[in-house]
Amino acid sequence: MSALEFIRTYAATLLSLGPIAVGVALTVLAGARMAVAASLAVALGIVGVALVLALSGASADPLGAGAMALLAVVAATALCAAGPVLSREFDRRTQPIALGLALMALGAALGAAQTRDLLRLVIFLMTGGIAVAALTSLSVARERAVAPAAFTAVLVTVCAGAIALCGVGLFYAAAGAFDVTAIATSLSASPGREGMVAAALLIAALVAFAGVAPAHGWAADVAARTPHGTASIVIVVARIAAFVALIRVYGLTQAVTGSGAATAFALGCACLGAIGVVAGSLQAIGASDARRLAAHALTAQFGCALIGLAAGGADGAVAALFVVAAGAMTALALVVGAAAARPQLGAAAPMSALDGLAAQRPFVAAAMGVAAFGLTGAPLTAAFLGKWLSIEAALARGWYWAAAAIVLASFAAVFVAGQIIERMYFRERSAQIGPAPAGALSMAPALLAAVTATLVFGWNGAAPLEAARLAARAMTGAP
Amino acid sequence: MSLWSLGERAHLPLVAVLLIAGVGLAAASRDLMKRLLGAGVAMFGAVSHLVVVTGAPHAVGAAMLAVVVLALAAGALGFVILVRIREGFGGVDARMVRAGVEDDAAQAALDS
Image (tube, rainbow over all chains, first blue to last red; front, top):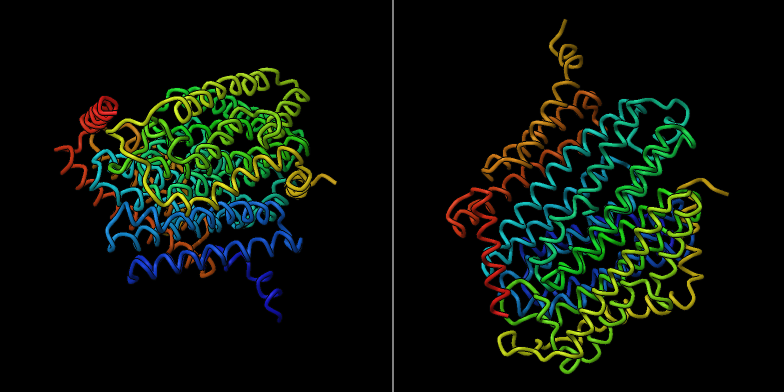
């Protein structure tokens, strides 16, 4: 077996268990320098494996392969910035623990994004949730408000895990299997009430895990308090992995096309999406913390994606996947930018930390500016194409209210973008916040990846659209 | 009628009660310790449901063990964080903790 063949065969295992194993090792025994080196090695490894899997086209699961490629790029660039930022946040004993927990959350997220076994999915999501809560709680010595946020993350993980396990158990009772394909086949052959209750429970749990509105409050609290060095993995990677799982489980509810249950699930998802778009956009306007803003913006993008997904058809699913990918890149730039602008003390990154950033870190400010335009869904940004497709899908279904929610959210996002740009370019940084910390160079890969993806795929989205079409076809069974 | 078959018959209503009561307690109780307890009750219901439904075959034994270990780890982590909350806020009353967090946020806004 050649190396390439080995990677293709065991890609899923390597991508999920590899980071978890390294993370456990770092948490238990490593020193700070070794931890940074190990995390960089993991970053290179996951990008390599994910790209081999995505580009070879050998995967039987284009949704999982595409999601892993996206998450691997986001996580790898975030890990490049993690070491230097964490060294200013924690002492030498805590740094490897923080990196180890981040790697565990990353491995769990990659596992959740690709697994087709629902029991494994719940295990991965619970592992990730516990790692995220533990990671957040590391900042408790610097700010007491961190502890309630971490505690809520633990509660959400256990409660959502319990609900998900009940759903998985009901699926097993209905279909005699945990595998998504086997369950879909069984449900389409003999649709029953048990399967639909199971899907409803599992979707409710995944809504909580992903921080989709109305269960998004905890995600914003954790986002505002988690360590800056690993924030991208907590805010972007973990949530998007759960959302990909949500897309997969939603596909199960559409196994019997045109049935009453399928229509009810579609309408329910569209309503959740509309709530998410409106709530996320409005809360982003009022956000007092830059990372909280990024978390709310991602909630709004999830809402937009849910509307596209629920509207149905191949185009709706393509819109959902494209919106999620564009939202990931926008959130990545905002979170990494907030880390570059953060105050010297404290666990938070208040909006006032963005004041005068353009004068001190012009390239970081430019990247955040592009991300801010991406939030609005402005033309020539990747989000524009995703929102356009979502609106088209909603209009084709006759859901004018859903299309109106997306348009209104875009107007709300203009206020958010204006606020970010006004603070960065037209205000002076206060002495109390202090100068922007050093180490912005380590953030260059993340910012460059986010800006490049936002602009290049906004100009020509053929490649990601084709990838999204492949994934959507595999999900919906369309020719 | 054996105990196992009795459990099989009665488990679904019991699981529903445990899940609703547990999640309800975790979401609405004023005492954070009770919230953690509620989450534990919900998880107990879910794990017992899975054991009854699958008949706990060897194939899912490792997964069951993993779920139980994760639930215990989450409980331990929740308890440790609860101790820090008691130290930081002087108690584990949810309203008091929320008021403390809001005070901190207002103070931070004033400072910046």
